[in-house]
Length: 121
Image (cartoon, rainbow, N blue to C red; front, side, top):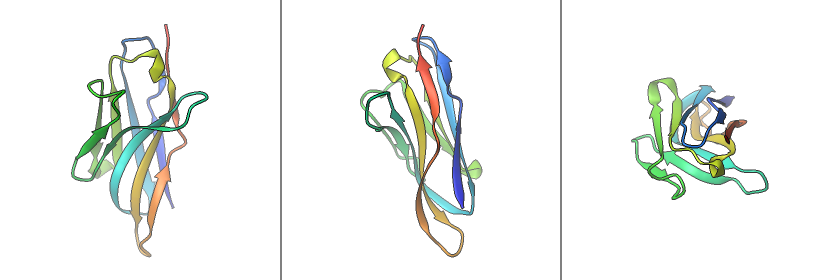
């Protein structure tokens, strides 16, 4: 069993910053890509950023230059540093990971339960 737990969400004023964390735990052999997605009220879930196990990153156009994704492989943790936040960044942010479990080896795509980010004055 593998789980992802996000933290770091909250209420922030426009122009402010937040750092989200997502820790993976359980029967993990290796983790390939990890990423952050978000879902605003009334909208579909969308990509925010992804990072591979060799630190190749990809960002949505809406967050390029404002967000930085990083990971600590020793801690099975991925981070999202968000700066210059805008009201339109308000959403539930979900962590995602592509995990190979310990034997019997299984490839799983895991989602966290989400953390709410609200950008408002």
